[in-house]
Length: 232
Image (cartoon, rainbow, N blue to C red; front, side):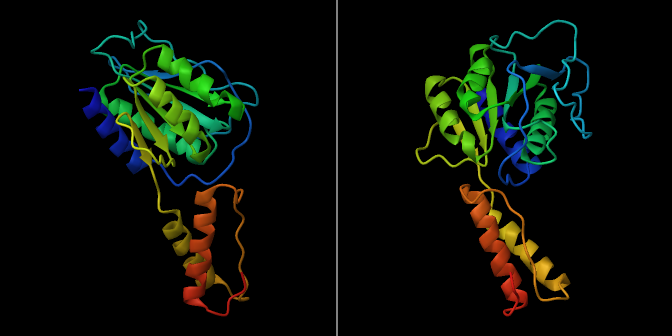
């Protein structure tokens, strides 16, 4: 049952999550925020408006608190990369996917934790793991190492790493990988097709993140396929 839940959740997340593309803004909470619980209520959609400067989304009170340690109760937790849950980027996309997956699965609880500092990755994952959550989603390339470590520490929990590649296969860890170069290629084709000056540019995240580098290479190749003489 748990492995079936993992598979379906991974597929739904894969359908909902967009390409992760480097850094977010700093913000924060160190405690899980109950974003939604089922039991007859619809899962609350992510707020697409700008976040308050110091507070994460408030907890939604429901009738009773699910016991995530129970065998017949499915709980899903998501840990963001450094930044806010409504960053209009990969944190938000992953959270929206997790909510839809949890709703489709009839999960009893789906929560998130916003990471304030990269050194808190492991601790934030541990908050969900120690409460008996069945599925923990971590967002972003930078969380790959902490996610793999947690998967080894908690073999009974299923982990999903958004935009993460694990060199060593683990039975309870699934990495969602995207073809950033293909997305970049299409962006390059579009930019070169629209350019009237013959000069285009791109503003990207840090080149220390491989997916960002892959996107940029695709962008350049796509532009050159339209105009071999274009200036990038």
